[in-house]
Image 1 (cartoon, rainbow, N blue to C red):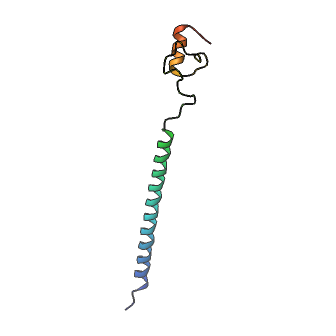
Image 2 (image 1 turned 30 degrees about the vertical axis):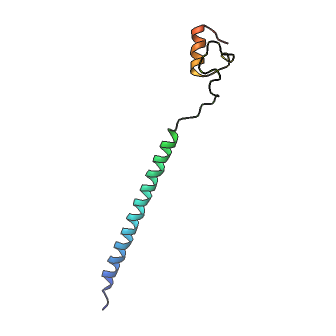
Image 3 (image 1 turned 90 degrees about the vertical axis):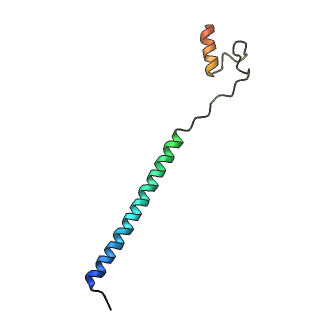
Length: 84
């Protein structure tokens, strides 16, 4: 027994609508996942551009104090009044 033409068209339309909604949902999920990955990658801590301390954190007698850019060395130079 065959179905009337109107019934077949409704079934095809429902199938297409369902496929569209599933594809749209997958697209939104992929976009959200990509955005979250981008945000997390942007928040990753940056590596220091300068080498680690060569004098174990003792800045006052360090031979490279004048050229060092580490925060402790900058603070020590300010406290000692040097602008080397």
